Length: 279
Length: 233
Ligand SMILES: Nc1ncnc2c1ncn2[C@@H]1O[C@H](COP(=O)(O)OP(=O)(O)O)[C@@H](O)[C@H]1O
Ligand SMILES: [Mg+2]
Image (tube, rainbow over all chains, first blue to last red; front, side, top):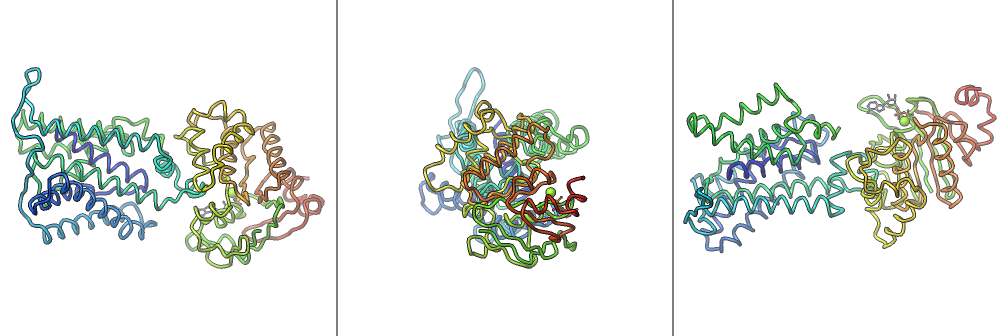
């Protein structure tokens, strides 16, 4: 469930960017990595954990903004494949810089509320798992409020629905897309902060996460935020089952099998009808 | 108010506007008629800044606006009702209208919203429904309402009567007449040349990216060539 919740956040960030700019952002996992890594180094340097986490989220958000302004926006008219390659290039760059500026080791963070497991209705739970689920829920609620209650959120939805019409209506679509990248990056980083006490992190952790987030987004039906969240949770569960019944070595293959199965059998994903609506 | 001169525009390597010049003065309703593919929408898109211009100039209120981004043009007073309505179908009617006022810095947005609902009662009735569920005529009203929410000085209308039943077409032209009576400056693109020329102060005829004739609405209505080509007479 914990992993699934993180995949859900990655998929959600992926979907946000995809909807507002039609870019399939394969650098999405780097935001999660940055969230964990920067928090660790901030904490190791003596910052309180919370402050280090906020710093990490801000760093990731700035990286997200730069990714859009420096790499994506100048190539707006390029083909989708070119844009994907740009995001992959950017992810390699972010990884490289992280390895050089920080380091190449695995790191963990202390659990926010200790490591003493407790029992609810027969199941043992780590406090950090609860933190992850609570944190992910908070992010989802905040995002939902932003989308449904603010004009800025509406302008993001409008841009996703029809970019040209949004421009003709007076929406600053470049600012809107920047916002989407910033929110997306922040969401990813929050995922990284929450998960690192359980999963560890290192400079190369984003690669697999991006692919799994993508798998989750495909599973939920590209472009559908709710689908992305459900897709992430389902993928997490599938992985856990396969690790339990087969071998944990095959766990990572699950995501790829899911991508292939979904693309072959139901290209619209689990929530197909909704994703068609975008067109 | 608006002066376009020698404007050229292309899609890729294919030039579709070959040096368009036209003018819209304050308070005027000017119509641009021409057959399908003549370049009418391309011209309006260029004026709004969502279509690249290769040469020529666009002046609005004595300022060259060619380099302004689309949302700035809306904020400065140019709103467009695009061809095919292009409303935000997943959003509600109310949200569509509110977004129309997104560039506004004054506090009259709520009052204008109420006015839109008064002007188009059907929109008021469906204000919390998603816009995609509206009928074609209602969607057109919504598209017009959304543009008006920006409180434009100049309204660009791209074939507002397209695909609508005759009674709704009449309603659209009544609305345009009312906006004209209020003093709004309008550039109206229509294939329904008869009705458009009847309501317009002046008109231009565009053929394959060039302006071929211009005159008052009356003159064009009685022009032999225009009658043959666009009025089916
Ligand atoms: N997106 C596009 N890509 C390529 N050519 C286009 C595009 N849109 C329009 N055109 C071409 O530009 C010309 C003018 O089109 P348009 O401005 O839509 O005409 P109108 O609005 O008068 O019907 C036409 O020949 C059309 O085929
Ligand atoms: Mg047209």
